[in-house]
Image (cartoon, rainbow, N blue to C red):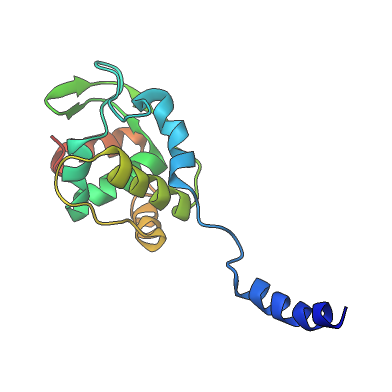
Length: 152
């Protein structure tokens, strides 16, 4: 019994050192995306674009990183061209906090989109800055950013 009493303060200190919430699981959040873009990120021709080389090409440029974050945060509406193919669908804005957006973008960039330039991880602070800079944009405005951001 004495041994257990001495262990309680140690356990309490260890519990205080743990983060208040666990890190967001990007793979779990990606299940929302997979409903349209598929589990492999291959997309559906003519309906939902693939999340591959285009994603990686965008992720190496500041304007592309902003576009990717805003695509999740604000949604997309209107035409974009991905890997040489036109898409005219609608992607709804996702109601996620900044950490969840960063987590899902990082999951896509490391586990789904495996071709293209080296991928640098998103941070929740980066996503927060993009959220603020794009607060007045509509889903159609975000779609217009694709080509200028380096989308292919």
